[in-house]
Length: 122
Image (cartoon, rainbow, N blue to C red):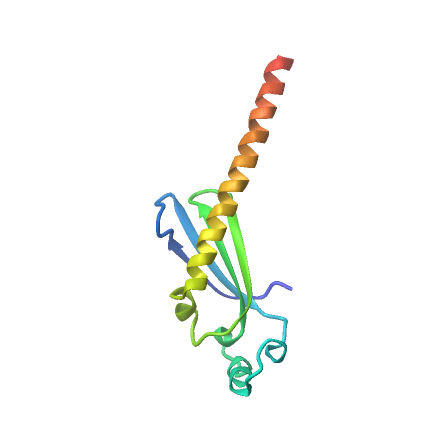
């Protein structure tokens, strides 16, 4: 069930031709299954979108549909902006960037194989 509550696009912190798309989606898991302290459970259940969500970070080549992605469930913050300032968010950017690079390398290999096959057939 995709239920996007928040989306924000920012420039990639290192590469100007990349952008970072942060999405917060509804978290289906219960905070009761992830927290032991009642005050943390109460905070996550208080109803604010940022108090309980699943984070999705996509690193995308600007102007294309080519992207890498990373997910982190069971997030509980005072605001989405607070989450975007934490180390988890930066780690997710790095993971999504590595995912993008891996996908681009795989795709490049497949394109080169196709071009070789096409040239042999011509």
